[in-house]
Length: 376
Image (cartoon, rainbow, N blue to C red; front, side, top):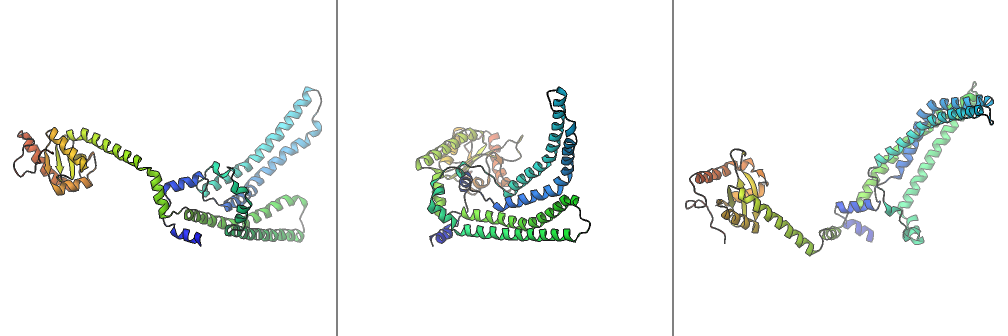
């Protein structure tokens, strides 16, 4: 009952930290059926491609060693040793060249299995000794759990199905041998390989869909098990953010960096738009290089006050325009030109300020122009 309630409360998607912790513990959506499928496909590849091409080569290498066995002189003479070394080297090279394709197919199968599994991790947590692994109580729980029962039933069905296929293919092969009139022992190796390929093909047709469905189920079940409750998400957020002193220190550092940037950027501005007290946006415009005014600094509350203060210190016009200042604070990006939708409104103010600058007027604008007083 408690497990069902716990599942019902796990309504939140797993966080990146939750997923990283699962990978660190070696908890990944791995499917055992993939290994069975890869083994069968690798054996099918060996029987279908490697054996027909390499058996004759291997037989030829061994045949040469057997045929020349009577001519090799084994003794204290140098000639006898050279003959033995040459024969052994020839047989060994033939054996290696015949086995290499088999190893290549096995390696390709292992790589294919790892790729279709998805994420593969190597975790010391999986091999670290734990008391729960040798506890009889925990062992009985795992043995008689629903998951163990499902795995047992699935494996039993697979064994019975593959066994039935093996009996069917073997029975047909034996019947064909007894029914054939011209069957000779020399045909037996190729005959066995042909029916082995048939058995592997039927087995692959059975195991491939099972492996695909098992991979999809494992990934779904793994994702479901990583789901979190709202309390777990909040606790993780608290753990990630740290204690209040650390959060306060981070906030102070962010404010200091913002103030340092503002102190460098505001003196480069041509004007400052304000709300008048809550928001401030500093704009720079150079007709030679800029196609439109550029937002060099912006801030709210205390940072806005600092921007206005720096503007008065450097004789930069501070103009009150509540809707435009609020809008630019939301949509303008730092060190980027203002959005095209606001070009017309900003252009009127910039033209007005530049015209006054040409007449030698800086902060002392006519009444009603919107110039603010020095902040106090």
